[in-house]
Image (tube, rainbow, N blue to C red; front, side, top):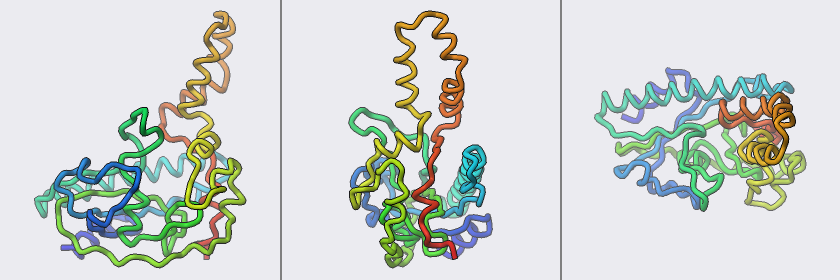
Length: 252
């Protein structure tokens, strides 16, 4: 069964796939996997190599590359899930790259599920100094999505540690979000990488309070507001990829 599933996935154009036992998935801050699928027994993790445009100096070109990848990943995940349900009578829960996820005051900026921990459990890489997953072929230039299922699948072998501890990711982080080993300062990271994210939107709204109608009009006509609106429409709109681009692993 595993070989049939693997071949179906790779024939679709997905760059890599790994299987993990649900009990081997350990993410200290995410929900328990049974919250997403009570009957969970296995995780199928899909690996996607981003287009070269994702490292373009043009932010619009880079973001379009990731949006294209996201669309393909969602489509692939849906088709694979249909294949599993149709051929193996499986129950599934698809976990996309990012949104949507539950948002609570005590869980700010925390996803329901960790694609990183799932990828490591499925033998698709190891954690690097930047706290991202380093894939044996693609290095850090890889995006993961997952399908949780009640099927019992033979887990893939675990990967070795690929990080060379060169510290280039730390040195090239403009927000200094990686200064402490083993931890990413989310506030610093998101504050820099998502300059038109939720906090920027809240700041803009607060700045409007007490302004005259004419001043409010000028604020709404400014490029800052247009960028906030565009980011709200697109979802995660990152403006910094230094930790990915600076990693030398997988470039050869």
